[in-house]
Length: 185
Image (cartoon, rainbow, N blue to C red; front, top):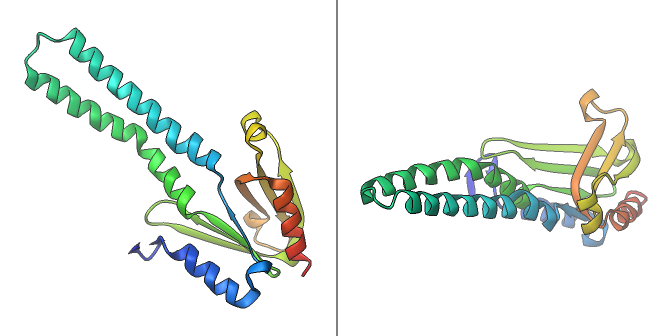
């Protein structure tokens, strides 16, 4: 579904198809955010927000049972709008989960980053310029779910593009080995 020129839900399929034709499927590595990202950034905040929303509504009805029903409906709708504002960042994270990905080929590391409905960022780095691949293990939750950050350091790029960080990568040691294998082709 293509809503705007920058918001195309089929972009991932198209990019993979293009690169499979050029490099073959076995020489491609597609990296996505793990389920932990969805759990921590989307599911849990929505559930917590919903529980708080229901709890406040029930508390209001319990404390103000004697008030006319119209006021309960008005307060419920106002509180619902506040709930939607509270969970709005989860929508952005859900878009990140569904639409952000990276593709490693023998020539390029390309990161596709959808940052809302109106902005998409595509960053490519030549694999010959990548000097180190670091696995950053900095979080106990990451360790429990075997999710870490992969950090690619490169040279000869633009000043701000020397470092590409991929967050919430499942089984990063295996992924790092696969990346090195592909880069050596």
